[in-house]
Image (tube, rainbow, N blue to C red):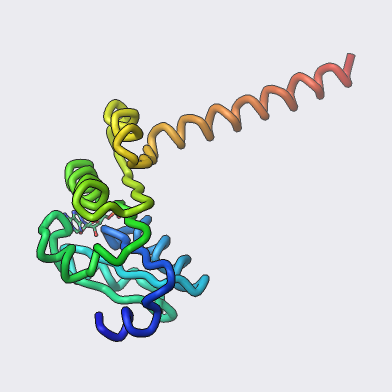
Length: 156
Ligand code: AMP
């Protein structure tokens, strides 16, 4: 930890919670773009998903545990992205980040669409894979029906 903080103390520092398919991908992308990233997962095998070029740090532990977040020096983070596979854990970490540590940007993944709209007023941005997927499918269907309509018009 010391190394990371000494090296880039004045730069943006992102903490990613959950090194699953989404978290690992995000951490790799941010790191490859030169970002300062620390990733937390409760399962140490999860870090195998990080690419060999990943230049950030990793901590094994439950991110809802305040000691783990303090070890990650959450107070120095500018961004916290909670993308574990537990809505409850993501909400809890997001609220700790906002309320206790006043982190500027907090983003949480929520599987349950019904919980999505509640957190905006607390300064927590949420992404819901089910809602995003539904919108994308709707868009594809709309585009398909538009192109069908125009090809039928051309035939007439
Ligand atoms: P995925 O479903 O592929 O996006 O993976 C989610 C990741 O979140 C898994 O690697 C889990 O081990 C991790 N995870 C779940 N709950 C927690 C938690 N409370 N703290 C840290 N990591 C967690």
